[in-house]
Image (tube, rainbow, N blue to C red):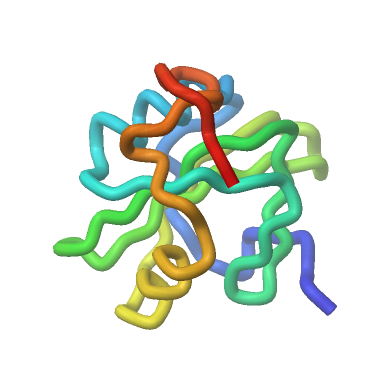
Length: 115
């Protein structure tokens, strides 16, 4: 059963108590690849808690994934984590999620995210 604690991924906090727009804008500025992620998505056996769909970013050359997460204990709002990723992790994101590079419908984007 998936866990709800992102602490087990040992990521670096990039943004704390951020809005979805702030997270999405940050990811768009710092990642060439990004994908739409919905609340409840499971990554590395962690259920990603979010208030609404957002973006997850890949920094391939650095081997990092930028992953938003809403912490409920204590209530810290949405946090953007930088998590070390190997090729399997990057491929999992690519194969499971739809690219949002030219899509809309997410806060901070200009078109509609389609399934």
